[in-house]
Length: 136
Image (cartoon, rainbow, N blue to C red; front, side):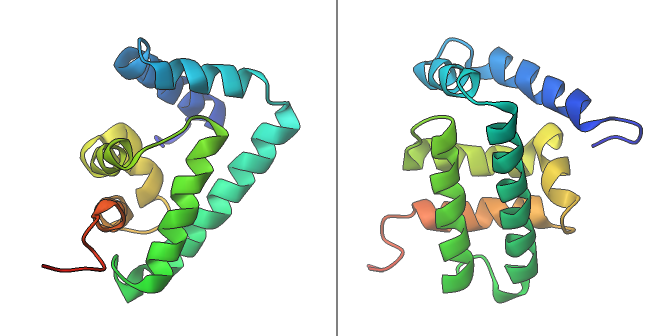
């Protein structure tokens, strides 16, 4: 987040970007419906849970993106998306790439730990690999 930018400003920026990118999709409509039914308390709880999870992932980074501990945390991250929409692995892999490639999103992760955006990309990519436990 840029200096002097509030969480509310960042939320507005993320919301505008999401609408621009995915506004015509079923997933976007689903997220809008689910978010619209949440109370301020629900949103605050989800935000706090997300913050705590990202801190756990940052602390686990030295173990590597493919480590069982990190993969368990990434599984929790994947499940947390269901507060807003029903993800699939292809979508999640794209989200991980966006975390690393798009400065609007990468800055969120970099505030937790240097290199975390790329780490998330690698960890999510591994999570989405259907052959991770059965190498050919």
